[in-house]
Image (cartoon, rainbow, N blue to C red):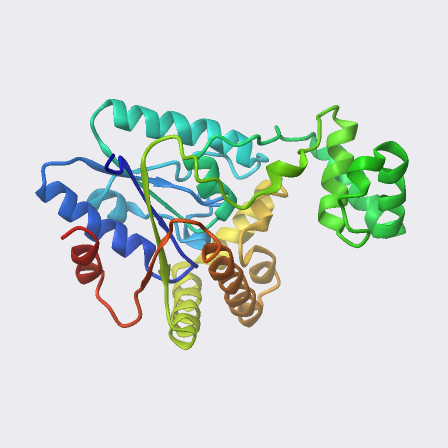
Length: 297
């Protein structure tokens, strides 16, 4: 069965938006109605469009975008909440006969958009804050001991130094939510909700680093620092503050933002190469229109 959903994944700065536009042009020439659906954990926030590289007014004039700037910057957001919205958008577009192009660089959000996953609902931020404070005060070993006392089976599956998973397990227990079973931690599932063609974009490391640095400079020139300061003053949520460069720009440290973004891009590439069935496309030195022509001849 031919794919009904086209998905594009790749590291920040690799050119996903440009390729989405080029693919949309080719789909329109075939009589289709392409619509982009963002699969990015931070582009959902209103007020962080520059910082997160979200589609701007010009991009949206060329291609309709969904799930961009739809959550107030003061609200917490989760992959589970995103999944519900993404499934509704994609299902609705397919029912209308449109051609969804899912575009993203956040691995969890990509699979949340494309598959049915056992995602846990968000936890009260106060619960998470309590465990974060305990982590900072007593260390990961103390949290592991706490988890072992409350849920020995779960503790046996979490490394004593894995602070993130320890906080997550304990906050779920406090909220009365069952932690994920061993099989739910997979990076990907081949069972997508609709037939899907997944394209992963790669680039020469030096070229990608240069593209990221140029992208950060362009964001700063466009007003990213003022955007971050406005979000901070408005009381941005902890999840909104996870946007790449948020804390760095608050400190006025552009070089730290570049370093952090390059590091994150390497993690994105590592994650992407583990996806079964992904079509890896090296975009180094290539024009988006040429890549689109190769993908949709």
